Amino acid sequence: MDEEFRSLTHRLREEAGGAPAYERLLSAPDLDELAAVLVRPGEPLWAREIAAFRLGLAGDRRAFEALVLLLNHRDPERCVSAAYALARLGDPRTPRAAAALATNELRVAYALLPVRLLTELRAPESVPALITVLERRLAVGDPYWRVGVACAEGLGTLGDPRARPVLEAACARPRLAAAAATALRRLPPSAEPHG
Image (cartoon, rainbow, N blue to C red; front, side, top):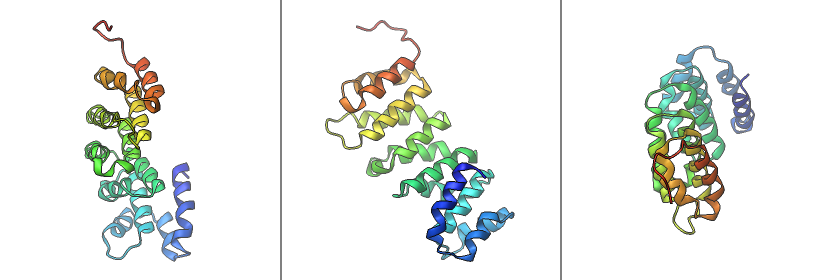
């Protein structure tokens, strides 16, 4: 069993409260049965999460909408599971959805997992979205500095020279400085002399 799937089953066992559907959803071989859970009225959240996660790992794009909703959930553990499944789903809509969630300033408190997913996806949307989010985290006293650190780390991983200006600016923010400096070292050498 996949380690992330094991973590999800352990987390949701108590939430399911011994419902017979819990074991069934964990082992159901029929993807259509799992997809039906996502559209059937009255299904509990834990059931939808198991179904969406399993469909995502199977590359079944019927999981996309449910996983995006879970990626934006207030429960960080649900976001982790959704990001993991989305990264493996292979749906071309995923990068745009992750970028939209990451850059939605009204939901910035929940942006950490979308930011990390963008880094993992290495999609055309990834660098512009991470730059946008990091620029917003440069405000003095910004409470979402952990999101800014994740952006800086992601930009370093992606190694795109377009990130240089925002990473240099982030070096002036104490909570972002270490991650930004590390990211700058990972960028290709600048074509223009600095200083």
